[in-house]
Length: 214
Image (cartoon, rainbow, N blue to C red; front, side, top):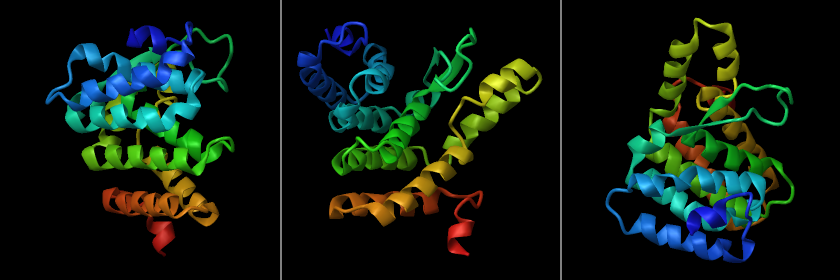
């Protein structure tokens, strides 16, 4: 039932909030999340990206449960998907989109697209906090391993540019957070932005925060 509701082709919007709430309970009341439940993680992201961006507050609860309850699967999980809209339309190549990438893409959208409210951006901040805290020191390792695996072939290396995970993406988020701090109007949103800023300072071991400090 949850899969049918989250399927972009069906778009049973009247049941979407109930399906997400059910998934929140199912992922919260399990010590270890089953493989059957993990199949819904990319479904949430695809629903957000395709037809339900205004449900990010509801989606943040099960997504945080996934990250907290089974961090290893979260770090290793991915799907193969078509390139972004700004890539060549006729490209037949699929790119690897990791579960980590999905969290960063969702946050990036809420920070850069005007139709998102500050409450929705606050939910994105909370997801970023869960991602950074549960994966401390490990987000960039995923990118380094990917580069080693596909460094020999030009075509695969080109596809790898679509993989977000890495310090360049953390730096992008850091810059966006600082920008939103200047524009934020509500105290809860400002508070979450400060939390993300401090968390990225703690995470940073490569110096992408140096320009801010000096």
